[in-house]
Image (cartoon, rainbow, N blue to C red; front, side, top):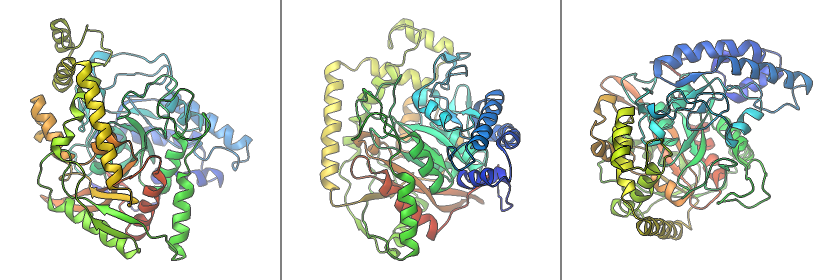
Length: 499
């Protein structure tokens, strides 16, 4: 692992690369070839991609170049020509869609999901689809089809399920990448790779026109190295569509959520010493599983607290509004989601399906979750949804006087991949202990993000340690981004790590 200091267009942020295009320093059609080369070289080392899309990316580069030329640069979409890979849990017509599973090996999409279309319509370069855990069911991107590793230490997990996205951003293949998150799947890889990752609030990003909201645990997000890039990405994918189950206020089709404006205004206020003070709750009691937090996780939170207080914000230690026992209400909903996967092997949990899934190479964790979910009755599922809603009300009431909640991100730095248990129940329990806060925000529906504020040394290797910022009300990505922008300005983190 090495930290790069030489300015190279491949290492630019999205904002800096957009400016380079408009200033005539380079063109997308020239830049894309170098990006694709890095995707294969660095991306290959860390297992970032399930597929690299040379032909599509080159076609998109030509289109982006035409956008920039025809519209005089200033009128073209800001992200025209910017590499933005898309996670392989989202479909793009004509590209492989395998979702990390042998059950879908060789499958090619026949439609493009709305969030992918929005990303591509902005003139971005779909250089590839990024590695995911099987069907996004694990916070480690260790699928039967391949694994993603953090460029900080190739023996350690890149996290999951957006592990490929996190690794690609961290090692400079792309400044911005799409991810989605049902229990930590954007934020965990952000922490493991030393980058930023945001889970959007329920209703901020439509899953339409092809996707369904279900219980609202899973939402789209973005990963980046800088807060401004993250805000650009969130504004890009934020939109509503007719029929959204969790539609935000506004007219269907509305775009953006004011993310970039919030970051820019926050930095202006910082320069003018006019930051509006916020009230931030601090929780260090694990809410997902009983686990002892590492010293580095607590040090990261303390570092954030000191910075926030130096800015005039108030940080108050508060008790956790739920316990690991309360969190168990998540399990029926999660396992039914696994059982509902449309696999071509018969009803989940049946003897026929069990045999066919094992023969097809479906992972042990996926099969275990599907078997459990198949046994959950409709009444039990409805009761679990009701319990999640009661917990959300409890959280919202406890946090109504706070603007954000600060917690540790993970219980320890990114783990060695060989520590991940092979037994599925032990694997799941290990995941829960590794991520003792993240899925709480999937349950309550508020936005949340990982900020790569801290580093620690383990056995002579420097590793990233994130802190977690959680929203306290729906639709408030802007507050979290303001806080992150202030932390970045005061205590910037390494923005590029070479494997």
